[in-house]
Length: 229
Image (cartoon, rainbow, N blue to C red; front, side, top):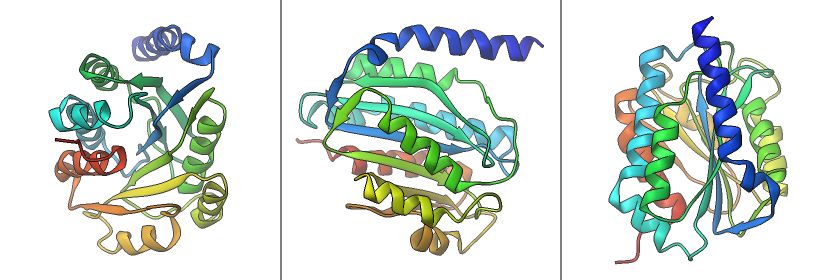
């Protein structure tokens, strides 16, 4: 009961923190959804490794430099937890990041984010569909729109992700992948064929969840754009 109450309070605070974003149209250089796998194959330690990895990345000086040199308008970032076809949750709302202070605040939000979804099957199509909806309805405009899907297994629930991936491409949304291959060694091929797509799409491989932090840092640098020295 206490855990559920904590989650409700967290989501209410985040809603009020992001209400100004929802109230008006904003232009940024990049809209980025970080779609994090929280299906039953991901235990609590693995979830925490993902969250800490994302939080650490947004505190990294190279990420901050990349954001500050990306074009002046900053980037809009949102995290989505996902599992089966009916289980997705926006965590922390949409956040505009322009400088080190914004990045540090977002890192704090992510590090404090509770696991909303306790587990379930794996629907990559559901994650993509939910993420596309978030991008289309966030009152934010940008020249680049990206969904960054991380996961450790193939879809075993819902339709094949290729169908929704193709819809994302039609909406001018790029889908990138970060695969964790400790349980499925050939998962990268599955993501390459049926998950990633769109302008400049790419995939990175983490050997296990302990490798996730290094890979998400490299991936974010590539998605945001390497900092101008």
